Image (cartoon, rainbow, N blue to C red):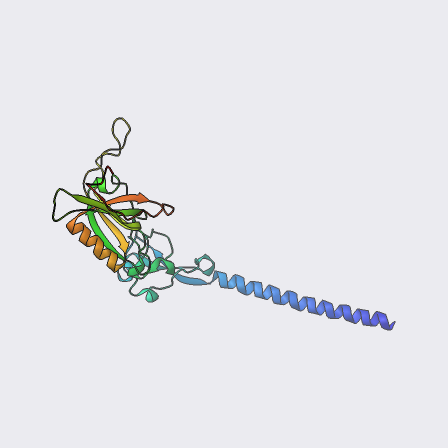
Amino acid sequence: MKSRLIGGIAALVLAVIGTVMLVNYVSSADRRAQASLESVDVVVVEKPVPAGTTVQELSSYIRLRPMPAAAKADGALTSLDSGTGKVTSVALEPGEQVLASRLVDPSERVAPGAAPVPEGMQEVTILLPPESVVGGTVRAGDLVGLFVTQTDPTNQQIASTQLVFDKVLVTAVQQAPAAAESTSEGTSAVPSGSSFVTLARNSTDAAKVILSARTGNIWLTKQTATTPDGTKTAVSTTGIFQ
């Protein structure tokens, strides 16, 4: 009799605990559901936004749109107050929510067709004809070898060429568009026009590049990360056939 009483009490206690836990779970679920239905203001794009648009300019492209909290994307902005001094890192399309990650410091933005500059490097630009940039095929992100040809100041009949730098990162290339992508025979069209090629180097190397462009001729070769480092031995007109 006593054991049955204890068992009954235990069952009653378990039932009460289970009921309390169920009520708490249901209440919590109701609160979560209610929270997800609550309206929040989110910054939404109204008109196409070009990449590089400042936050000050962005105000004319967007509006605050109320929507259920559950529909708000992670990182979506509820105002532009936190973006002062920043620009859009990419183009934004109508209907999309403006994410905090889309706004960056102007110095962090990488233009389309460009490669980021490694830490500690700076950019230097040189103007080269098509044949000096592998037929105009050098693009941002490529690694190139930089060769310099200079004439002997004491004898204009003697010139020498030497590899100066290996695996130079190209950060940008600006060139006129080709008149045609291919010829009637299906071969690539001959490139025309010079290219502005921007390279990432430290300050001393940048000075060497600038001086070489002013006093000699620069020629680039396309390399890869696995291209062996070349020997920096000058080849002169007197030693080509040796």
